[in-house]
Image (cartoon, rainbow, N blue to C red; front, side, top):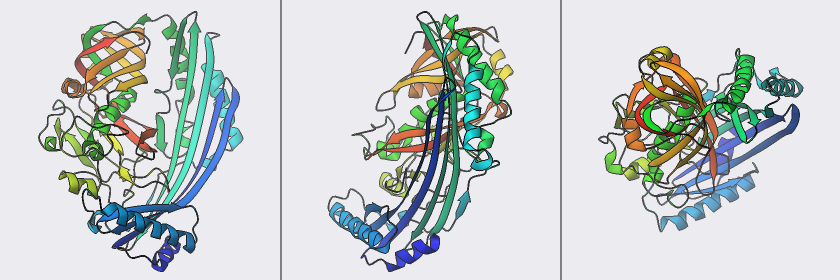
Length: 479
């Protein structure tokens, strides 16, 4: 494909300072079983080329799903016209340096390819998961899902880029809903589709699969008779599967440079972070170390370079509590005058790359799970996100979890249902008093991070250890 794209590129007749072609092919399967009965089985494929043209300091875009020279030539001329028209109102000129030459190749690590299991065998596993979840007649609904996606991209440009990336991705989920009278409780495997990884069937049939399925069903029943989470200001300990959302909403989105610059205000919102904050703002306690890390093997948003060709490297966004970098393209970095990372990404062949998250991780601290629990006199431990709300500046938030446990005198005691907590982003991260060690660190992901006009849903990864926050307002009740 690189040779074919290079031939197309050399055959284009378009007056421009720079031209790039990004071809994408994607094939997905989606299987869902509900109450032991197959409910949804689908396959989908999509392919096309995005043409980028730099003229007069402005990039124009046009896409086509036909790989013929005629179609790509027409798209290039359309992109050229867009760039010329847009350049009259350009806010900041784009230089060729914003599209660096890249010659790279990347393939996701994979142990068991997707065809290691037949479609029938995958369905049988999902059916068995549903049956295993039904530990009692009080389980009124079960569900199990497996989604596989194979994405391949090729990128060539007039300044010599020849790059290829192939991603093997799998997302799984299962859940049980229990009911006793008016009380209904749902327990899922880490809060919905959070089991999202780069890899193969090794992430569907894991060594602890059936033990975990049994646990989810049992905990759904347990929640029916559990007490409501108490309402108090106390110590909050979050599991890695809830830290996924905490990092995503209160760190990832506020640090996107296009939001800070105001470009996303009309749709996705803005940010409480200001450009002058970088390098000096205290975002959290000294225990807060957040990295952008596209190098983690198997994490959902690992890659060698982003969709503009910028090489992807591990960087600290927040180091020892101080804000260091934003999430933004070379274009946004030049315009904002602040450092960023290689995180400009497109959701498909017919979308331009925009400032996004990638893998955002909270780095480990000290103390294993038991040692961390033992250090808490009174508090609540929460797992698995159930719902969330955060304002459009990513400042004030309220999150609900599926499952909670009281911590009393250094021990986990009673189960509590409907655990919730709320806070203000800088105050909350400033109250971080303990971060678990590497043994507590787990990575998850989500395929549904949305922003942009037209909308783009992108895949992101988040890894975290357990984390402890002091003086947090927790409370019970449905959400």
